[in-house]
Image (cartoon, rainbow, N blue to C red; front, side):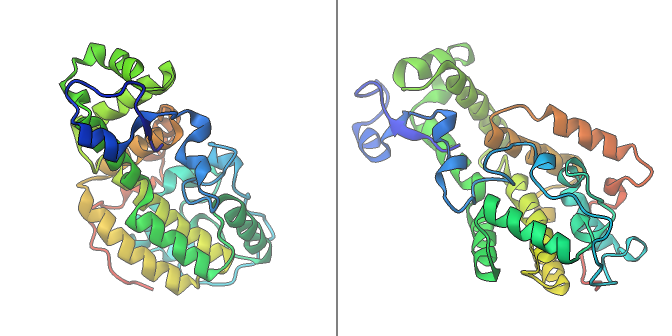
Length: 294
């Protein structure tokens, strides 16, 4: 959610005039105007323009999907590195009803390829290799974490951090053209920023990037080797940012809350449930050495 910055009042007592002129100010940030709907190419969305539930927005693997590769797609052949890849987006894989013990969550095939191409075009604006690369570049260089940091820095400049916690909602409502619901959202998100800093939601973007590599592979825009190679590069960056699966998932869920403007309780439940299973995807050591094994 990106802030549209137009002060309701001409200035705040503690806000320099230069900041008002250059930053514009916060307002008009209703859900219908947020960043998930502003980019025509769908890059601001996780999987669907119209649905937040990813298990309802992606095609379900079909029994007659034709296997095109016998390498990393076979459960028994998964190395710890590929298992690590799968674990990074296992929550979404589970929500989609897919198989987190298979690279990309499903077997490739002609029907799957067509379904994935349709989903990627509708939800991400991806229609070929070039647009896939463009989308990947966006999520790795900007993503939602860029907007999050920008929004929170702006609120900090406005002096929100100097306002007592109990008075922050009233402060935003008094000074900015937003709804009660949006004011609560900004206050809660800013509290997240105060606790975890500008990198609070980094895992959200990187986990989605890992997931996209599986989608691109199933859609036929990347070969399996290309998808695995790129996943390895992304995974090394992601792994270094956190010290455990719990820390990574916490960041991912904070990002979901920022994107969806709702709590992440349902996804938290999925995570806790996955950890209890015999085939727990998070049983792979978080700090395992990620190497090319394909």
